[in-house]
Length: 77
Image (tube, rainbow, N blue to C red; front, side, top):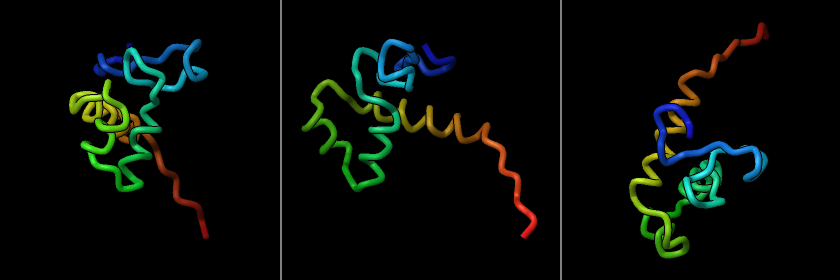
């Protein structure tokens, strides 16, 4: 389980350790990519019936938390 994200798990035996929605092989990256490509929550639910609103929100929260810890160092141009 990922700290603070009980619906998201990291397991070296599943998708090389990428964060996935618990009980699936659908990665956070994949769900975020679908949303970025314009898929709606309804589209995702219709194509992946095991995925619910809470799973999508968990993916977004996980991505937010990972990005909030990212450090950016501007280059001298």
